[in-house]
Amino acid sequence: MSAQVAIVMGSSSDAQVMAVAEETLRGLGVEHETRVLSAHRTPDEVRDWAKGLAARGVKVVIAAAGGAAHLAGAVAAHQTLPVIGVPLAAPNAIAGGLDALLSTVQMPRGVPVATVAIGEAGAANAAILAAEIIALGDPALASRIQTMRQSMAARILSP
Ligand code: RP5
Image 1 (spheres, rainbow, N blue to C red):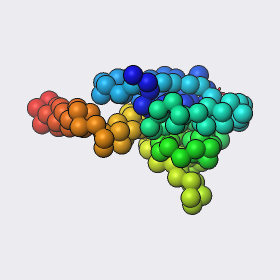
Image 2: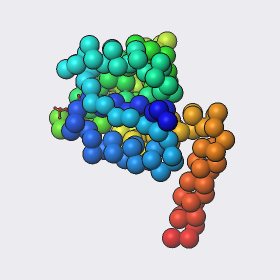
Image 3: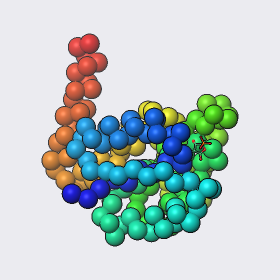
């Protein structure tokens, strides 16, 4: 089956955090693919990659970046699949990644990026949100997400 979720990150230095998104999608049985592309260092490749997503069957994009975090917005600008932005704390981050959060979330009206929390929690939630979007047309996946929620509740109630 071809990838339903495409993950893109601005640098290979983001890979450790974004592995959480990959693991979460794997756990839910969602086919995905991962690329490293930078809005600033490889702008032409970002455009070409983004424009080819829908034709390849991708349904949702997860885009993560830390420094001057414009990657999610750039991917959203080039096509109309839903884009979930994950702000990351770059080595020179301000206030633990607040700069990336604001760069990712403060899109101008008309070109949305659904922005999640900074770092690993955001990476996990981006994967779950992407799965929830795909589950609108996939009852078996919706059921797996429900099971995941029940397991989470059980771990809290019976530690
Ligand atoms: C962003 O700048 C990347 O997403 C990364 O979070 C940050 C630092 O990148 P490197 O200098 O480590 O490649 O583009």
